[in-house]
Amino acid sequence: MKNFLLFSLCICLFAGLQAQEQTKKDQNLAKIKEQKLLKFKVASDTTFRLDSTLSFPWNSISSGWDIQPNSRSTSTYDTHGNSTGYRISNWNSIQNKWICQEEYLYVFDNNGNMTEWIWNNWDTLSNSWIPFEHDTLWYNSSNILTSDKWYYYNTQNSSWVLGFSEEYNDAGGPLNVYYYYWNDVTFMIEGGERELYTLNAFNIPAEVLVADLDTATGNWLPSQQLFYDYTNDTVLVKQTGNYWNGTDYVLSYQNLYSYTGGLLTESLTQNWDGTGLTWINSRRTQYSYNSDKLQTEYLYQKWVDNLWKTSTERSNVYDSAGNNLDRISKSYSTSTGLITSGYHYMYTYLAHNVRISGIFQHWDLDIADWINSSKSLFYYSPLYGIHDIGESSVLCKFENPYQTGYPIVCPALKASENYRMSVYSMSGARVFQNTFNGGAAVSIDKPLANGLYMLVILDGKGIVYSNKVLISN
Image 1 (tube, helix red, strand yellow):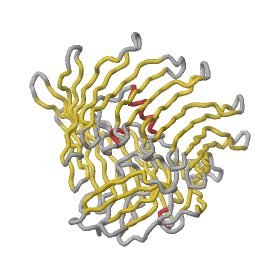
Image 2 (cartoon, rainbow, N blue to C red):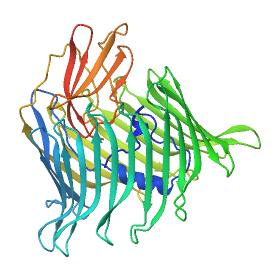
Image 3 (spheres, one colour):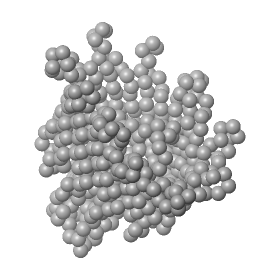
Image 4 (spheres, rainbow, N blue to C red):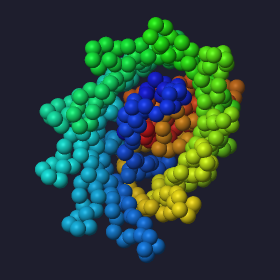
């Protein structure tokens, strides 16, 4: 699904800033953020769309891949290249046929903005689709998202209940967020959270007041007070969190952020010791990048017994075009230092950045090595009628499909000059614009609906770069 902490997307660094351990809210957000939509593009005159994916299981007895796929996904598109549907089916070896599992339906307006998102599950008893979740989005005349409401389907009385809502000002700055937590069986509300934002002159959060829902009275009770500090007006360097003790807010934790060359290299969380009046390390995340500014290493550690103990480690390998060839993630026990779980993805591509196959492996604890799990094959068809709007005189590199906040690197741009980056929908509406210095990293830091867009970079004389970019958050 989609990323919904959109105040974090405004500066592409807020995700993961909360200092608490995993909570009910986090679990709900993890489910909200799950993204099922897979689409890829060709970086040339012809754009391809992903029509279907087949997954084959690994047969440990024959030590080979099964001939019969056990899962498949199919996609449908409108004439603008927007995905209108995505369906997942599993192979039933007893009935010898594909059985539907779930589907995702998407509705776009004439400007390419996603206005509706529907998730249905297949009910084998009634042989029909049963609603599960539903998202509705509204935009202003400038195609800026102003409201987002997410609903869960109440199977008890066949109605929708609000699970999430977020409001923005006309410039896209967050105003408020509401979360409601429902019991999946009884659909009785179990809690909620409200976030109210105060924005600075650059339309990004300066302060957030967090309150918890008292389900007995329906009142919102104070919970946290968050402050954000920036350098150069928009680069987040510190977040301070204060907790409500019943009568007042008291200092609780801080998140500190370090950068190199405009890229985040470390985020450090420290808790305040009110007795010793000092900051105590809690956890940190460190990031490394290659020469193209693509993330190659991710290291998440916890402070245990006055030492940094690794909890999660991730690595990425790219080819010269920026394709992600190899991705590894390992989780460790902070007490023993041993791997507790892990996954490994290996991808192959055709020319022009089209992923055609992928192999997924998991970490086997018994043999302490990678074991094949599944293999996926991707099938495409050409999408015609979409063309560049200008010639490119420089080369820019970025991950495509693109996620909000990922760096866009144009090494040939002059550090002494200013440039303007614009993003257009396929209908020609400008949905994002930003100015930047040629020596700085730049990104699309506004959340856009998934789909195909045109990325254009201009100097004082005209277009210096243009290419199609596929947003897939």
